[in-house]
Each structure stands twice: as structure tokens, then as C-alpha cells.
Image (cartoon, rainbow over all chains, first blue to last red; front, side, top):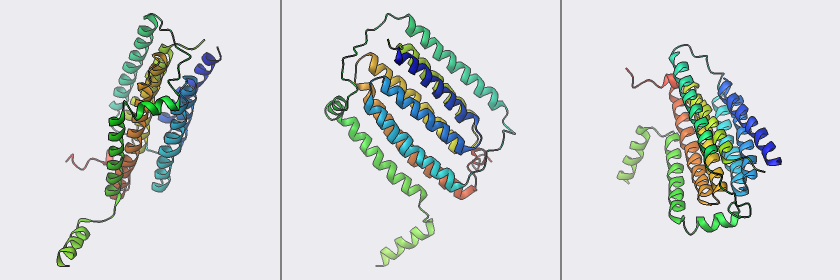
Length: 180
Length: 101
């Protein structure tokens, strides 16, 4: 019973924060309401007996990604975005897309509602850090290693993207090296 | 008593729809970026819900992978936004039309 009340409270909070993220024109307000979505999803993960994912959600999303986003917003000193003056047909496209996706969501709701109930095994320790770690380093070792390589590539890519060296200075450095 | 799987999937679908509409509506690149994060989170919620209702740890492992992808996306995406801002003094995606003419 408590879980049900909590679910509807958090679902309402998540949906309204997500709506505000899209609604606000000031990117900083958008970012702050997105943090509200992340925190309510994190508590939902706790009610789904997934404490490891809940903590990782706070650490990675609210702690790392959103700090980076807010840092960039502050660094670039962004103004409020201008209202849509051209490309007005985007309102129609976006509204149509949203309605189609909402229809899909409710179709899934009814389809799952109609299927026979699956008995939930509340005694299982599926969400524990121990069981996630055991599976991660045995059964899913290769995907974890691929993720590691991907993170390394992302770091190198990000550094290459934002470095200030122009082509001229790179060529000068190469020339200096060949002369040495 | 717990809310059924269908409730979580409906919430996930609604959040995904809001994120998709946001990507179309938003004019600045950082806003679009945040809406993509919202869509990734909606998918994570349905992974965790399935993991709970079928008592299978795979769903939670793949949430972990999605989070790693989101972190990579944040690093590279914000790098691209900063590089774009240096050239154009704007993050409006309408200004990224240099290939158009």
C-alpha cells in the first residue's frame, strides 16, 4: 500500500518536473527541474528493490552529468532562448510525435494489464550490490570491458574536441620535430 | 501490495514522450541534450521494472551500461557544444546551418 502511494506521488513529481524541463526557456531552470526527475526516479528504483542503481543514479546523473551541464551553462553565460519565430511547423510535428508516443505508452499499459499476473518473488536478492557485481564480472565481463574502452575513447575525443591548437600550430610542432 | 509492472511502463512511456517532444521543441543545444538524458532515464526505468518483476539481474546491469553511455555522451556532447560556441558565439541549433547553402 505504501509503495503504491509512493509510486503515484513520485510519478507525478517526475512527470511534472519533466514537463517543466521542456517548458522553461532558461536552460538553468531546465537543468534544475531535470535534477528533480533524476531524484524521483532514484527513489522509484529504491521502491523497486534496486538500491545499487538508485545510488548510481544520484552519483552519476545528479552528481556528475548535471554538474557538468550546469558548469557549461554558467561558462557560456547563456541567455533565455528566443521564442520560436520560424519553423512553426515544429510545433505540429512535436505535438504529433508526443501524442503518438503517449498512445503507445497507454497501449502498453493495457496490453500488460491484460496479460496474466506474474508472481513477484519479493525474497530474491536481485538488486543487491553483491549479485550485480557477481554477474558483472563473470557473465557480462566482455560488455563491461567494452564499456571501459568506450569511456577511454570518450575522454580522448572530448580532449581532442576542445583543445585550442589550430592546424597551423600542429604543423609547426610537426615541423619542429622533423627538424630535431 | 505493489503497483503492477504496467504502471512503471506507462510512466516510462510518458517520460520518453516528454523527452522526445522536448528534443523537437528546444532551440538550444544544451536543452536538446537534457531532453536526450530524460529519454535515457525513461528507458532505464523500464529496465529496472522488468528486472524487478522477472527477478533477473540483467536489466539492472544494462542500466549500468546505459549510464556509462550517458556519461560518454555528456563529455563528448558538451565538448561539441563548447567548440560550436567558440566558432559561432551561440548554442542555437538554427545557427548550425553552415552546410546548408
